[in-house]
Length: 327
Length: 228
Image (cartoon, rainbow over all chains, first blue to last red; front, side):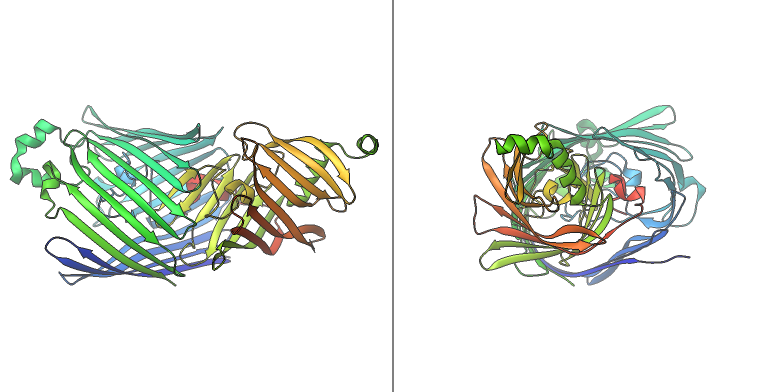
């Protein structure tokens, strides 16, 4: 018998104006999150739907739609699930198990992955998981990935080891997170093997709460899949467009943010995403106010630091003003 | 002279600390609590939270209200605290000493179910209906350097506590009141934490409902499961 005993429903409406040098965009968005849990089952649904003008487009994004059943310590899950393998806030080298971040998505919202997984929860210090990544579109055996992931927590240290196979690539790696002198330090490394070659990816960083109100985070991302400077320059403007993925086009990136909050009602944050060799990226500032009950007002300014991939962003300055109401 | 007699014929400091911990919460419990954070004379925020605790092992806390914060989850294991924020989709690892949701409680004050884990009993005394117990942090990782508490002799529930920083300065004070019998045992259902440095701001916690549990699913106390 499946008995649902804990139900969680959350919805919010956002209304956002985006100002650039030449245009004003309007963005209306509704987010819905539903979760029902019992001792032996759970269901989660998270979706976003919205409207963007100009272009006057309506969109629907299903981030989570997953059913889980528990029996004897085993948890079976099927559906679309938000996966966040890796301990970095912005970057992860395990891109197959985590949607890549957009530097322009300040709320770090990401769509999920289609999965089938079985995990065993009855070992206190370890969680073994067998997982199959199912393709988004037409089922093709070539695009299916499957394997195991072991997650450990012991003596204050978190670690995880994925080993995932697809038809042509073996994805492996490791990640670790621990506290040291009041800092939380994390390090993720991927080693993807294909046709006799390894491709490496790494995220190394830390976060730290300073006093009661400051929060600091910084992380370095090494992306061997990205272009080196000479490779980028040799491609030329037309060819490089195929490789454009802001924040992922090159090999080295540093993401940093510092946040100050007061009594959970207001805050100010500074953030940056920089390619240190290309000296390009973006910097931004965000002001938030939760003064009014069940609402959040956010004002952000993003300045593009032009150079190579960031030359393709048509605007230098962006101002975003959002009012979000939670029901 | 009275103190010497008291120490010979009554509890030791360690025994009293053990009793304080035993009555603090049952071995396993689930409670619904309301936290009201008074930021200034005309500003307050009220939270409703579900808390599941296994004493000396772990505490899970989920925010139910207000809507803006709903879905935020916290997990305490040993001195490690994770916060899952649904808008970020990830769990962040925090410090036990950080303020809990901007309140006067630290993460540890609200989620820790045992003093013995981080503190050792340093001294004991007796005044009228109360024991006076002094705790010292076992290491620099302890949330406070020192805690002093007035403990009710009748039920071993602390009535008043003072928290001291690493520099030895009095930092916070807490009163515990409204002792009610729940499932046959007494529990303080009202806590008030004040910051001695900012007299106008304080935080109240009321226990709305409380029940002991026979067992808790191990999956609840795993950091990697917070987002599920």
